[in-house]
Length: 317
Image (tube, rainbow, N blue to C red; front, top):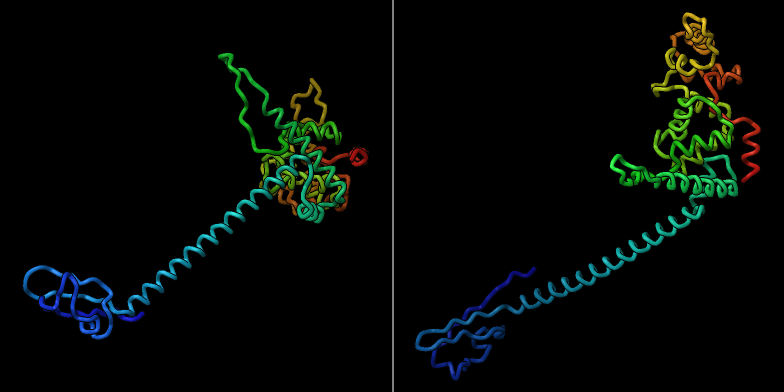
């Protein structure tokens, strides 16, 4: 920027007539021109006139133009942001409406098709089933309970998805899974390993269902192992095997130790699965054993659908 300069001149009183300088602007400023009114006082003495150099006016005009342009740019930028925000809100609203109606957008549909073993038509049907199951969960969550004072209380709304109650009913009525309560709970927690124990969302529901119905032997074996690993530490221990098999034998009233037979069974099963002989079953131990003897995949309890149940389910889609 050009350095600002000022010019100071002195005007004698006899050159002032009726509030104006008799000198021309060139006399006062040396040719620069007077850009400001003179501060003229009364009485004798000299009067000081300060003039702003013309280069300052150019700078001021440039700054003014810059600020004006900045305001226009800011206004345009804010307008674009507002438009993008509105478009995003409309897109989310449209996706929400599609999800509520059981429809999914083509992009998500293609992603799910790659992550699962279902066709596009099967995915559409499974999405509709998901919405119905979620509606059942929401209806159950709105059930009124009565407090001790007799006032009606609404149960707190949980995260949207398929909850434990509806999930267990589905396994029992649709896939003929009749097993221990502890296994039902473990199946729910193991279904979507990325959100263990939370209500099943659409993505987790479909990916888990793909393994459950059409998974390879290794995929289904890994699912069974997660179910049997009750504390999720990566091993199936003696205590866990005992808990899983405790009700598998009929106990006789005359038995001194009703669990003695179960303990013997645990030792037999552990010997069969414990490949590395460390008194616990790792995932590698389990996979190796199942690979050799596929019938042992559900050795600790039923957690997979029967073949007839799978055929019946797909025939209804």
